[in-house]
Length: 298
Image 1 (cartoon, rainbow, N blue to C red):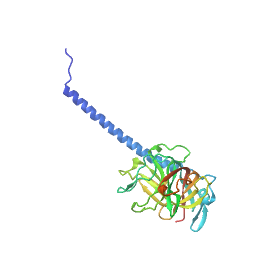
Image 2 (tube, rainbow, N blue to C red):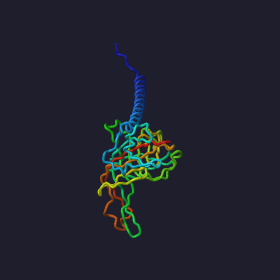
Image 3 (spheres, rainbow, N blue to C red):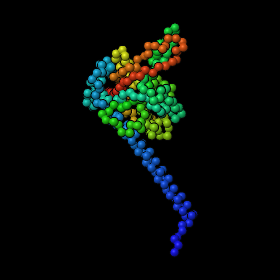
């Protein structure tokens, strides 16, 4: 007896069905991977705040810690030590140390306006200065910080690679609509999660924009220690807890402390005449940034 022969048409149909089934499996796998990354990125954001330090470094000068609330002066270290139900009291929301700038940071803005931070990609953290002319004199003028951020936590944050964390100068001029409006220019810190972009590259991120309140020298070779107050917070699909929970009802106030600074002071050469005007120099630096919420009386 001759063996049964399979029709070529049946073979082709079977292979086609298998290919469709296999492709369908791939789609399911892709969907599962996307869901897994979404959940992992969300959890990474939560872990930054949940694993934040509970106390400030011992070497922080009192001049950085003094704040005035309702006409009364307080020390942030003392406020952090108070029970959480006290008013006023404070806690550290999150802390970060500087690192290299992101290689491919997402833009910020709205669906209509997408602006990339003006920073040098994948370069060591730096304070950037620009040579400017004032009358007949020439001098290096501070332009902006450029840095990536690494959370300071007792243990590594899983899936941190799904987030982009950076520090730069917010340029202003973008109207986010209520309740944020158009924040002023100023130093900004950002956490972005591209997998949470909700269909817009400028979503899935939160920014904290600050204004300097206090400056304390930290030696001739290092940029000073700073205390900055929160002037704007932008939340676009990410919880604000990575920086602050400040609200518009006056019940909370947010601060960021720049601590443990190393390097970053202005250059001493290279800005002597008209040909130098407009040139920039990146001066490497390192610093820690502690974000603190103060709970005040409503």
